[in-house]
Image (tube, rainbow, N blue to C red):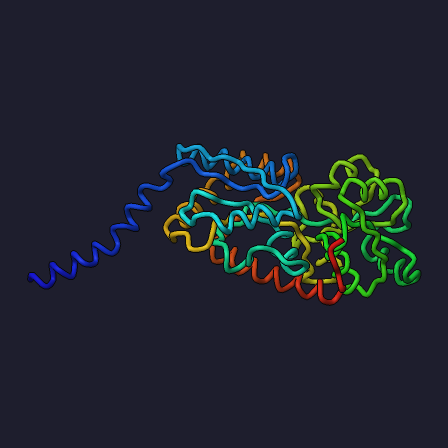
Amino acid sequence: MSSRIRVVAAFAALVAPGLVAAQAYPSKPLRIIIPFPPGGATDIGGRYIAQKLGEAFGQQVVPDNRGGANGTIGMELAAKAPPDGHTLVLGQTGNLAISPGLTRVGYDPVRDFAPISLVMASPHVLAAHPSLPARSLKDVIALARSRPGQLNYASTGSGSAGHLGMELLNKTTRMDIVHVPYKGAASGLLDLVAGHVAVMFTSVLSTSQVMQAGKVRPLAVGGLQRSPSLPEVPTIAESGYPGFEVISWWGVLGPAAMPKDVVARLNGEIVRMMASADARDRIGALGAEITTSTPERFAAYIRSEQAKWGQVIKDSGARVD
């Protein structure tokens, strides 16, 4: 009997610290690093998550904007934070799946983070100037093939998601539409509205206002399903290219080696709050859609996206400006 008691006591000694840690979490204010300046979709989404986590935990959650280098500075800071669950980061397509394949960054997007959950996504949309004689993806393909190298497209810069997404579309559809890089979405959109470029493949987030005003024409979206923001616009996948997907996505992560019970608790709270009508309204107003996941599915998605965009970078010869 005494040996059994000793075994039970030893087991309790092993599991007790983890149980205490889970019960005590969070033991102090949290911060969520937003690796971009204030004002954009990442900032708005990050602040919403901080607010709702604070309400759920009864603890302050501080949004911490750490912009620079396409979001990689903030990601590096998060990777090096103590893995106690009190520092989180809102990562996205660019700084987790694209930038590590284009340039040297101070973190490994797979090894240095504990993925918690995806939170939102926005499909890219192929938008054209109204003067372009094309009302569908099929029309653009036919026009581009009849005028190889004569049509052009704007992007937010070399190596951006819009650039790589359009290069993937070029390859998939066997088009030859010429890249014209801009420094940011605003200048590229201005030239699209002015008719100086024919098309642009960028997120619904950045084009919603000019599309609603009729200044550009949406032709196809890059999600696997139609966008609630553009329900009448077909997907590229349903337009003859099944499986084609180009979206911007965001997710919450922490430093690697975070306790699994803390990751599980954060995942549960994030999935719960993002399922609310309030979240759907707030995120929907950005032109984005709620999408949550298990930590394991998010980790697998990061790996698959990194492999996908790494191949596009290799095939296109893309470089950062």
